Image 1 (cartoon, helix red, strand yellow):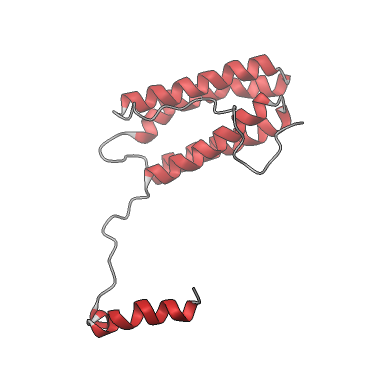
Image 2 (cartoon, helix red, strand yellow):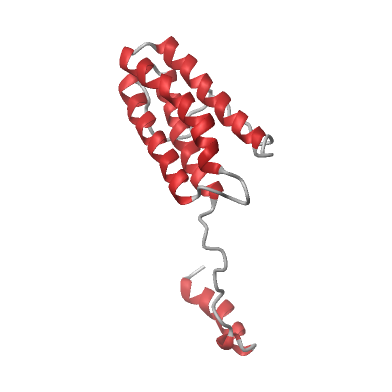
Length: 153
């Protein structure tokens, strides 16, 4: 459909019904949406998993760094969310789980990276359970690569 036809079909009938007097919707919630922040973390850690699965320690190191940066962003932007101490849970669950991956990446040891990855995934799921979000279950997700990126070294 041509853009001008859309305007004629949608905008003109709205104007006829007084749409020109509608006020813009005001945002009442100034908190960042935690699901969006966590979605970014999930994307980064999924790329970390795909890098580890491919045995690409250099790329895994990059996504490890980016994942940890996202964790800090979540702690800063949404330290509490709907009464849950998000920043505290990240300190208790995520940071300790991500730490061993540093040594595994430095050693370029695929088995150690896979083991560390499993610890990260377990920490995500433990945190979700602790926040009554156990229905969100994270996996390695390495069977299918949905990204238009090669993770091979």
